[in-house]
Length: 168
Image (cartoon, rainbow, N blue to C red):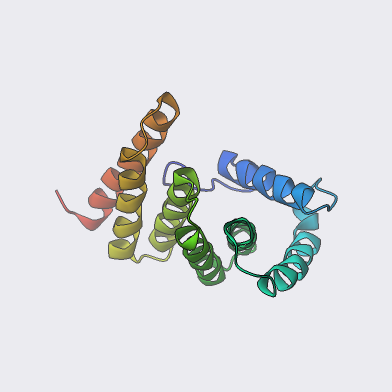
């Protein structure tokens, strides 16, 4: 499997995404303790909050909140086995983050990495390579010790994808 990709319900990435969703729900004023069985309820709460936010003026703050909800819905969809819905939600999150004037490179990196992984899982290798490369490029603009490890993850995934595609 790809590094950074979900390695099953107990996988590190799955737990990290659950923590992100819990934080997002907490900021929205919802009970934030999630377990696998609570994903449907969480999805419903996120969808309800999304309807409210979509009616608001699209300030940077609202765009980021909408992006975070779409990102969380994409993760939940992927965990429920719907990669196509996961991709759709992640694409919408990406659109929100790109429209925001206060673009957080880390938001963009993780969306690009997730999309690259989702496309790889759907055997859409050129699309996967495109998004994994965007993930790496995003980090190249941000220099810190934290990004060095993430660059390695992106490079490792790009390398594995080239092996799958027999581009060597």
